[in-house]
Length: 246
Image (cartoon, rainbow, N blue to C red):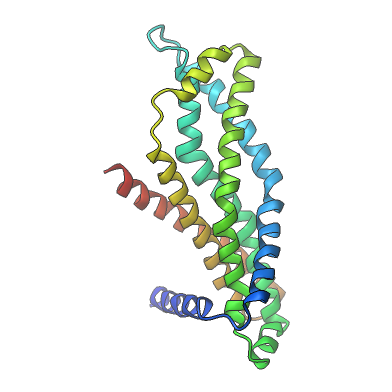
């Protein structure tokens, strides 16, 4: 029964979040702040992880492609498909669930136990909308850009590592990147990213918003936010993949 209780309370919260804002200019200022906090703050870790993972994928593929019938451009093709379809949209979002999700749950949870949210309610402000809506909209806006950067850096990392280790030459790798490209796969990837952005921010905000107790419970809410966000990312990854590939 707890599952239905949390589902019901989650959708009631989402309804409050998307109600008409009291003052649009204040919300716009908050959205810009959250874009900087969520997006720009996450760029360094995404860049480093994507670059080196692209290199690792290329080296592992080169080690596995030992048959002479497999063309050299398969390395570039494999790196591109791995980064575009799964690593950047899914694995990077799982990493962001840990970084962004725990931060959101801790921030809102701390405001709850210090009665700052109660103070907003007393002033007649829709606390759910004011605190959560800018985070959701900022993530939906900025995460596709972050994932696009991740895709580029992953492929570039594969190119650099492939050339540096002698696994392939420049022409073959670039040819592999361009070979058999299907634009609909980008729609698939960014559909996942937008869905995951909503899940990460809304679920983390839910756990933070309904935190009860003290500092220990804030930590528990942060952990729950990361766990449930990660699980639902994997579930929706399967659902979206099933819809696009069948």
